[in-house]
Length: 537
Image (tube, rainbow, N blue to C red):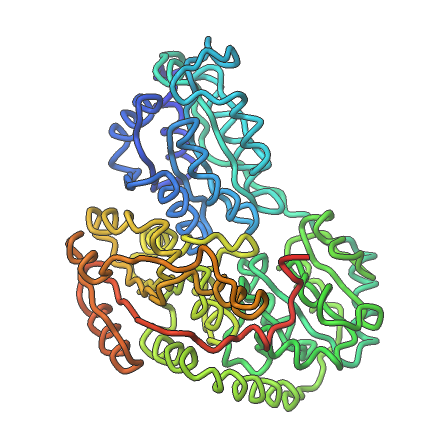
């Protein structure tokens, strides 16, 4: 067996697992790991960021855009804690992200000496965020543990994982057996009895509807075949946007789904939590539920289904498509509901016009990454998407500051695609330092910053629900255009939709990252159109 350091064992194993990119920040506990990255630089690119949160979000964006495992490396203690917002987002969105982190020296772990970056129990702290956290105690142990990490992340319901290694073990030399590559992952087949029961449900239904989320992104061809077989509308959650082309006559967003819901008698739920329909749309006792999910625990929430198929989305839908007869097409109701929703969205003039320009200027396969801001909410519910993985959101975690660094990771994963992020002024400042990363590494993301001088969503709630008693919402912002210039990137201000069109054309046609500031006042609210579980009580 070859002799190598623990750091080399980690990086060479990752290379054999197909990892070609690592985002990270070096530090003394990770020196042997980054030295190993230097030695592997012909096969693994390293992107260093300005904050640990940025590293983890970039790995998340890389994974969301590509479907591959995103990898980041940060120091222990405060470094990995800074990354946990992104890890929580990855866990909530079922995205495979591997975090590599150090420790204090192995002989001092658990003693409470006050060693730099020491936590009381780092492993247990991280297990409160991600399902798989393990530490390698020898260089020889690293490959097998990393293999477990990849199997855990990719086998069944996907999720992030954390791999720890103390600095003295990263530097230690030993004999290490490297794996040839990842073993084949198991793909459970749907139970034949469940398929038969599901086919009977579909046969008995007059108005079935298919609900999909991010869990269906690897099964889009099967989804299209199945939907066309049973002629059911495909209602895409915000995280499921683009699972089927929005121009397809069976495609529907959540607002169109709300409009169709009163006549739905069977909900076929594939790779989504089904929270809004299951908890907020009513008729819970009238609608039969068929769940296709790889996770039996998730498949029972928010309530048990009438029939549950525990399998991957594609195998489940393919089995059903082969078990039910072809239904005749009848798209009139879906078209009418889509037209009605479009009319309502058009009344929200400012967001509608801005979103229209964005859709027209962003290529069909371009990627849009949204933060938690009012225009982002509008495009999640009201803008059409034509390809899988072209709308990237923070999911139910709603992590403010997510969009810009995540978009950088998406661009690294998909260098031939145009990538655009939408942030508010509040959220953008959470990771504003990553403009430096974009310039340093030549990552051509275009960032839209909606500037209303406030945490706009919170301010609206305080105005409408708390009698205008506003606290902690007004912001003092920099000159965003000048700030972009100071980092060495292009910046411009767009005060009208047509000015935004001009700015986007210029940004997409000119190499290099860019920022577009859109000054806005109070925007019309989309929330009156949306039925969803309350966030507060």
